[in-house]
Image 1: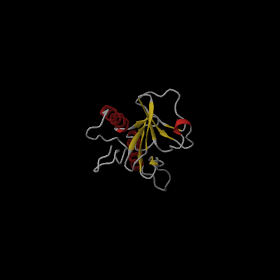
Image 2: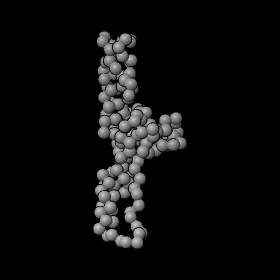
Image 3: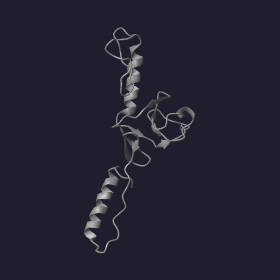
Image 4: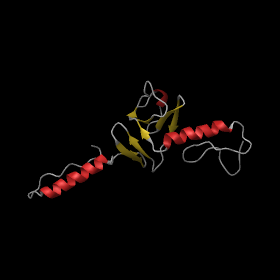
Length: 150
């Protein structure tokens, strides 16, 4: 069934679209709900190359290099467990996620980007303890906010 104004799936996250007179609408609505449940305020357990042995519904992972098994060929995608099945999401520019294992936020722009922590200030011929303390506090605050790694 087609509608001349719309494709059958949404452009960004491949959500199924409903059409007038469509049978079994609940399947499409439930799929949309499951996909949105996985993507809204996205948090992954960690980055893995191999699917976990006992995934729980509602959990998600960032698929690492060398992916195998059910995740083969899906490096960089999000694998979310919903209703006993894997849902896969190709990342889009601007997408953000929380890596629960590291506590760090990542964002996607032509690849997943995680901020790196700059070194604490050292050296120099004049030691300015107050400036160094302030810089160290800024770095600690950015780490606590999940912007930089601890």
